[in-house]
Length: 148
Image (cartoon, rainbow, N blue to C red; front, top):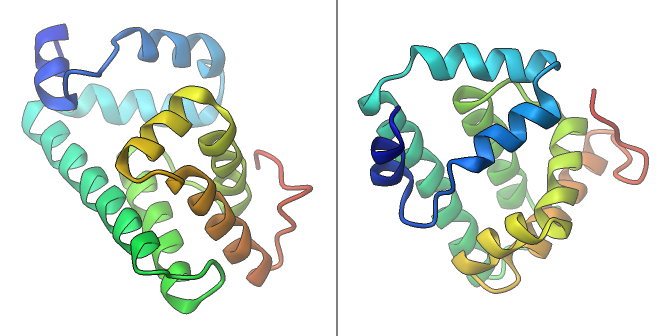
């Protein structure tokens, strides 16, 4: 996609440097290769569908937090599973351990935290707790989870 198409699809806050930064950090990983292959095959309409799916998921996360959905509940578990499915379809397959690592980043990385907290204040921390609780129910210790 051109820079103009990216801005139109991903919104005014989109920074094209993010892709270059991600490539520099993760370009030698199998996950980046899967992402790069999928990205190269997508045109504007496919990217629009990805964006709409991700936006709908993020809206559902915010609504669940507002409704008082507790981390560890069945409803929270369904949202965590939906996140793995959406992320896996959009970017690359995501294991529970990898999702825990992402959850950490969602809360601690200033840009990710700002993104989630712009949807709902406190969403980044809530989502991390929700991912961690779901991981525990499936035998993954969030304290020792690694990118595998």
